[in-house]
Image: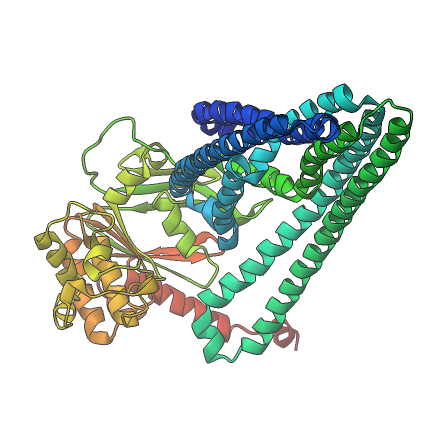
Length: 582
């Protein structure tokens, strides 16, 4: 298997590797001296057998021993220094790539984030660990040390040339084994990773829907599905492990064969007086230093295969198109007139249409309600007008300007949003209100909370605005969580307020309070609601009914509702074709 990375992989990884160039050069220099000192032990053995033993050179033995002690001490210090460099490299890689990846994910369009499972995005941060460990761990040291192994081969030719050809043949076998093991293990590792992503996706679904799973007693079925995914992952792991273990076993056998063959050939050479006993023993020691990295290389192919997959996966993400980072011109707060012109949008590849040829206008000073059956495109319409989705055809205009030119920060400042799923972040109520408005004053926070009819409820808690909300806001009631979400949308005085079923968790009194607040705000804001609440519909100036991604009716709510009621009653009263034929 080739270790060559894809062009994309090289492009994104190169700057991080270049930043480590000084450390890499120092590590290479240290590795040279470490491997040079590694020659000391075989030479020591050679000299002891050929000079000390046969000539009783005790003074020579003492000198050689002292030299070996010094060499071992230096080798230890050099290895420690290289290990510290490796740790520094690991920390640098982890910090720099993790920060870049987190920023990249934050800057991606919502449609891209939604198209891939949560398990996939989590896997990317595990990929960083793979890249870090490969570039700074034992595998990196293996790559650095392997070229120096040929120094040992050259020395073997010098001191024991009759057995050197045995090693050349064994090395050829190792090269073939490594190439074959790399291809097989890489393919098996790819399948294992795919199975692992599917398994983790099942676990994510289980945890995200734990309330539903518990309430509907879905645990047996969910357990069955997860166990099937886990079984597939284990099966793929076993296949990959079997191939890797086979390659390692063959590599170990080749090492034993090399020792036996070298000893046999060396014995014949000694009998012919072409080789000394010390030379044979030293050659065996050098062969061990030579074959050790080859054995490790065979076992390291899974790590290299994972490294290449991780680099390519990260390269794919870093190459994705981001949202606009900064608007070209800083514009003042808009009046809030939103126009959707001939909008088309769909999901999937090829896209299945959800919104088709849609023309809608939302005026300032107007409360507009959007209604429709499930799947009619209501929530998609909201995401389009907020710039979270880009239409496949058509334009979304804010005060006559295409929203595609604005940064996410500008659009979030001008368009407040309260989603149907009120997800809060771990932290306090105050922190959740101000995450998007770090400079908001206490007075502004309180004003927004009062508009959302939640200030009094927050103050009644022992910790008030310092109350922890828990993971996803789970420590708050559904109604309070929704009101905090509404207050967050009101904060910052956005020109446009967009709310998706804002009263789904509110009682009648809270609904009426929100209705009155929206009536007040409508004088200076554009307000857009997806709602079926009769209380909120009373305050609306305009009602839009969607059907299969198109506008089925629009106008004053009373007139639209009357027309729909008349249409339904007419449809019920109309005789069927069978009745007409009778």
